[in-house]
Image (cartoon, rainbow, N blue to C red):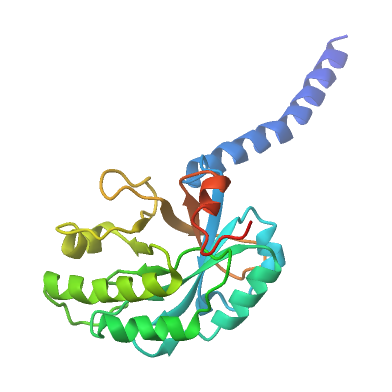
Length: 239
């Protein structure tokens, strides 16, 4: 009888171990996926991700994507056309972003972006990436920078008939934007902790993760709203 009870206990333990491992993995994923509680999830990509299988990525809990288009006054991301077309074919809602350099005029950078990115119904508003990482060494005065940024926002916003997103982090925001923040949709980088305080964000980028159809890491994002609210941001929304 004791041997039978012992065998039963071991069978119970053996059956419980996979369940325990699954629960542990789920809890661990929740702890290390900062944006898990938001239901609208996305990615941002550039040529650094190489060739992307957009159908596989779309099936991996991806509702939207921001795709790098341009940088500075004359640089075009070599994979923009491919990513723009293939993400659309895979049914991913997408927008394009521009990396704003501190050493080129805003008007010049706006023209570069407009020349590359089409106006399409159902696209997300254009975004401008403001950060020090990878930027030129020149550091303009705050008001001079805000004037150049204002030119970019005005020209691009008028062309696409929409407010723009501004992607930034706390360091750049405090240095250049906090004193006179523009009227934009804020997209904040905060690798681990949810952004708090100002500015009031709509999109949040946290630390990179993995994605089906992508070799290596990919930036993960969430939208702080419902799918219906995201659709309200579409450029020239279709019925």
